[in-house]
Amino acid sequence: MELIIATLTNLLILSSMYILVALGFAFLFSMLGILNLAHGVIYMLGGYIGLTLITALGLNQWLALLLTTLIVATFGIFLEKYCFRPFVGDFNRIVMICVVITVVLQTGVNIIAGTQILSLPPFAEGIFKIGPASVSYERIVTFAIGAVLLLAVTWFVNRTKWGQQMQAISQDLEGAYLQGINVHRISALATFIGCGLAAIAGCLMGAYLCLGPFMGDFMLVKVLMLTIIAGVGSIGGIFIAGLILGSLDSVLPLLVSGAASNATAIAILVVLLLIRPQGFFGHEVEL
Amino acid sequence: MVNVLLEVENITVHYGKSIAIQDVSLEVAEGSVVSIIGANGAGKSTILRALSGLTPLTSGEIRFAGSRINGKSATEIVTLGIVHIPEGRHLFPYLSVLSNLKLGASLRKDKAGINKDLEEVYKLFPILRGRRNQKAGTLSGGEQQMLAIGRGLMAKPKLLLMDEPSVGLAPIVIEQLGEVIKDINKRGVSVLLVEQNVHLALGVASMGYALQVGRVVLQGDIATIRSSNIVKKAYLGG
Image 1 (tube, one colour):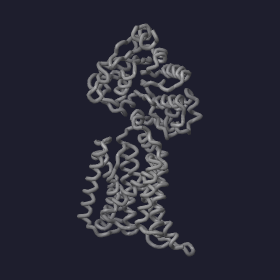
Image 2 (tube, helix red, strand yellow):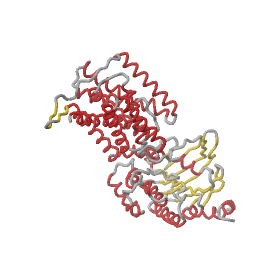
Image 3 (cartoon, chains in turn red, orange):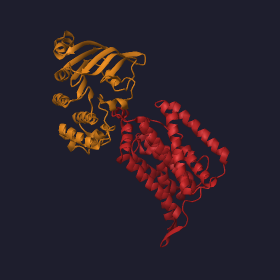
Image 4 (tube, chains in turn orange, brown):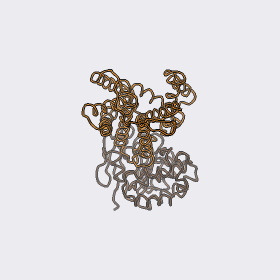
């Protein structure tokens, strides 16, 4: 019983964190074709900034979470304006820029914080009991934050004017320009939101698991797999793909071994690329 | 003398090193329908792309209601009231018909006015009301063209640029399209129509321009265009 509940909560938490990070990546990719390989280090950066604000400045951790989100999201606007926008359409250059950002940030954090494994203090303490079962409040809070954010983003994309404009840009860029949609402003907004979400996920995962300078690489691989399984342009697909990856990562390590979950996910990916290159839920590729 | 709404003066546009249009001048009077005809690759679409700020000019000047607009962004041009309905429609295929129409009003803030115009569009194209929750990509070709026009009207244009609206439509739908263009014009919107379908183009317009390999080879009122040898030979079968 304990094990089942622990696995189930782990599944939900991992899935929601994967989806949180993947959304920002998917926004940029589907709107302007920007393959933001630096999204993993942005997630890592979020965790470390959160930790610094809490330990070095002694801030309340909720305040630190909020501040971290704003700082990293603003950094996202800077990235979009100076690193991505000038090179939209130039795939090679954007990949090179992302590699540079990744190396600089990773090395920077490595030098300043060291390679030791750190972690943020938990966002909630205590244990919640129902009958024989028990769950730590930390897990409940972590999942709750993730779920609320995901609902908020879904609402934003589907129900607000800016969200509709984001979808319009990703479905037909020229059509979007001709409606007078300010494409630059909307893509800056999407980057702001995406980086903010990644930073929140970084802080939450830093408390739930731990922080390391290379945690971003691990997450980037998950995000890439998730986006490929989901297909481009489908938010629902990202949710389902996130649940699939989260399930694999929480269940398989129990049954087989940690390495097996990655191997299985990659096997699914390879099969998928062979039979359905546009992803499970993506739109048909238009030529 | 009617006011000139749009003046295009000697514009030249290059795509890379190759010239797309050269020294093209044209005028659209307020409240009129003007057609540009010409074969594939004559540069018709390029003129419209230059007007809506998608393609930069090499030289020349474009004035709208007296002030210079070349060099302005696509967003600013829509704000001024120039709305471009592109060739191939460029709808948002996975959004609903209603969302597509609302996105046409992206730059407007007057909620009441938007709703009123939405009703107008539904009145003009009743079929869209019935399909408002359907995804735009699932509509038929004719319905998609109606949606593209409706979306353009949602921006409250003063000048509507229409690029090959008849492409891929059945003859009967093209006839309806002609009526729709006249109807839109009656509501006070000036129209610059680019068409390969000469019957449609000459049927609705009062003025016409013929384009060949990036240059204007003929201009004048519709009677002049109709009776000219170039047009007769090339399009109307002698």
